Image (cartoon, rainbow over all chains, first blue to last red):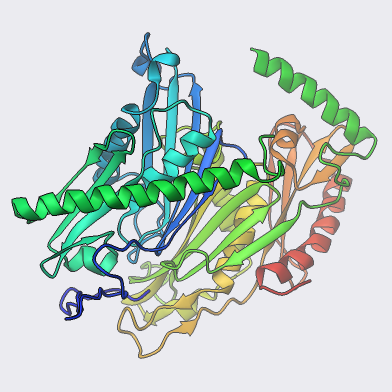
Length: 249
Length: 262
């Protein structure tokens, strides 16, 4: 993938409403989810979402580390979202930068909102997300991967947690931004929704939108999350209703 | 506590099996787990390879950037190897600064790449003393089911073998060219269990091991790096034996790293 120079803005929307990769405003990129690809983790999932590749693993409920974070009446949810050095155009220094730490925090809080934490007092549920190839929307792909990994680990939850980003590109509200749209678009609104209630447990926004646009974006996000939810269920069904070849060791 | 007891039982069992020339997963003493390599897995890297070594999974990405040569080697580029033992890959890894295990793994892999002259560093020089390529080899461990060193170097050599010099991106030339790989080192790791010396240890075999030894060889018949690790000892005869075995496994794995069927 060549780097995109800041000077030459690509054509983000054709007159007949096609986006840079040919999608319509309300279309997702292709999503492929594999549940349980890892052996050591208690639960895992690999998500390919457009040109994103994200691996997630879940450990726990297990002893809390560091100990002082332990809570007597419930489990805590910890998350580490990390990008591989080679996942982006310019090599990223290994380790968590401030962006990764913020994303880790909001993702941990999103999952804390859906797992039945009170069933596992004095334990930690550790969620690890590794971005291996990035092309915008990695936190959403990470939430989706982690949610399937939590289900794969058998952690009881209110529901799966689908996520998607809605944005504004060339003045239009569009679903699921890819890199060029993220770089040159006017707004980005990633969200994660509890399908049962339709409520958002993760929501961030950056850019410019009017009230009308935001309202449209939220509706589009809800629809996008519902589609992603189907893919997540499908991946879990594939993992648990075929042969027992990949069953827990 | 119960973990320690079961580990003890498992160790006894592994030792017992090894004394009969057997292993828990049914392999022979001198047999590797199945190896599968997916080159080009990470498209944002200039070269990459996903290696499956049994259940062990590692992904290596190579990135090349323009930088400045070191003052003492003005005519050479820079090569750095780093292995990240991230907590995603094993219940025994915790978040935080690199552990001594992670540092050892990185350095043993780096040493083999460097000593074998895998890349001719003078080739990475663009303008002496001013501008040279900096080659980052980053190994990301995704599933630690034993023998990270061999998997990590294999992924690194495979990723370098499929890497491109991104000359266009940095405005150095009109076209990109493949990165030239001069030598292909392969590391083979063995562990002692009683009198038996097993190649390609699993996670449990590493835990039970009474010593570990790694031998790096290249295609010209050179031994380019070695590392004895863990608590335990090897006689000179043991060492000569594992070197011979490392050469035998090396040729097959080198072919795999280049994308050929051995």
